[in-house]
Image 1 (cartoon, rainbow, N blue to C red):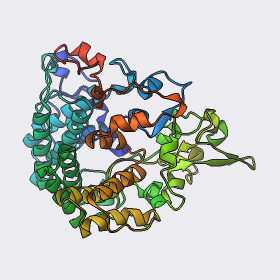
Image 2 (image 1 turned 90 degrees about the horizontal axis):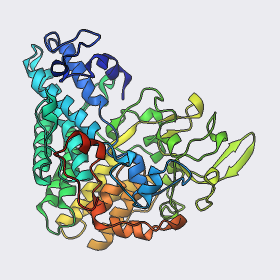
Image 3 (image 1 turned 90 degrees about the vertical axis):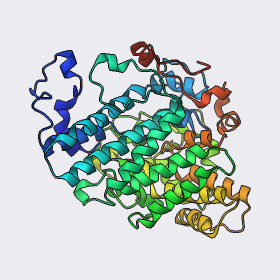
Length: 481
């Protein structure tokens, strides 16, 4: 996250529970001395942003779909996910507790900031930002785990942690309430110095995705029209646009730019080489000091891009030059040092340590255009002119020819494919496959390197992490685990 938001937060790590535990923070900040000024409110909200991360751990999104293969000599938990031998102690499914930390921070802001004597408009905006952030956390949780505890008040005691799971419908009701209330009090945009904060477009765009998800595979669901309407509101704001080229959208200069509606921003390369390094090849010459790749793209994903698609060269690393020697990488060679790599979130033009990890997109304008196209097609039982226009904006930016004259089903499949190609490695694939009812078929069809995934219908949900169940005995496990 942005360093300027993190620095004031060091004193807030025990916020909300220090009285119960009778701990004295080294800064001597307590409930009695904190939440007195606008600066206190800003710092508390900064703690909420510090909890924001990609919507799904990238190892989970890539290796539990048809998009990626973990390097099988690496950490055992990734190959287990890939083969769908998933257990509740797998370390890569443990985003449960982190999300609730962010939720509690948002609850604290909503409870405490209204009592601070400060500018009323700014106070309302801070609370709205917290609501939007809380909604994002709950949206991630409900899609990953199904029923989850709904906690909308500040947790002030250890007893407050032992809460049972609430039904999915109740979680979605709260998500919609938070986003609707947030969009009313959020600005359309901020000065460049404040980029990265929640906006009207962020709340509206997330609402569109919520409605799209709730529609699922239900024909004639009213959520399709609602999704289309919310996506259109984002478009009509006139704030966002596509960059001229796909490469520009993922350059370091795009941080806080016109295409990024919600993103996790990094001022410096605080995660080594960012996700670009983590999903690169395992060959030292590419990265000073050695490579550290953990997964590779599948042949089905790589080959889904046509030769005309300009996104392919941005998304994948297919060769590199070291000491004047060119090494070509392979999509099928089992040797991890020779594997084609993901590089979309790694700006190789940066001169710092051989490249720098870019911001992590959570919601881009291209995503909104594709949601709009999909929702219009579903709501009208066939694509409208606006649906074609939205889809073709994404396609033509990628160097592809515009589409026309498609039936309902052909257009649906075209949008699904475009989402896979456009949003690769952005934490969308698993969620898209689940909401459209295609996860099992997609995973079974992707059998490179003798995967033979033991996927079952219950795998559309992840198990509740065992560490969280140990801490809270009221958390029932998902069926099948």
